[in-house]
Image 1 (tube, rainbow, N blue to C red):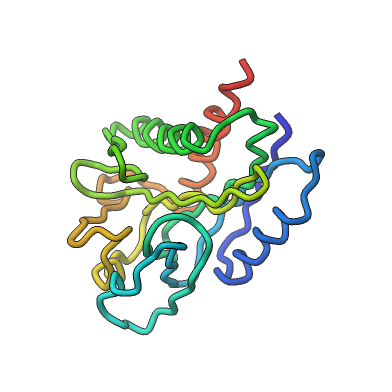
Image 2: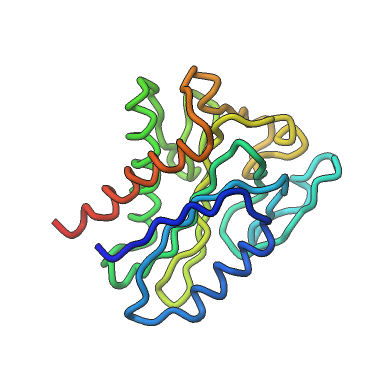
Length: 205
């Protein structure tokens, strides 16, 4: 499987978004797929159909309108964000199946630490009980994906109270630290990326 995993550390959101768009626009049939593991400075991102009223309070965090699906979410230090720059046609995988595989990778990763998580019909992401621990949003262009998922690891969850997370009023948000999983965002990203690779490699067998 021709795929490169890149640990990019803590990076600015806007320039990373631009880099994803550029990578996708310039890639050819031979371009290897890439997975980028990052943390971002505090930012709210508003998806294509995102409704501004889901931002409840202006707490001084910038809001960036972007081209993924979904509503508003928060990214900040201590949350790992994994961007999936994949040629879906080459992988012979459809968008809905990709979403399911991403969710399964998160579920499998958390299961290693004894945490039971699940997906919810019609609400992409991964949940522990009623609370959301991972969010997911993709853009598909010319058969290739960008954007990806975020997993709350060890962060300040307060900014989530200024929004309706993913458009759901009162949606609780949790992180791996709440369940005594002793990982930094980067460690969680590295381990989770291995589960993602297993899921993506599954259709080759």
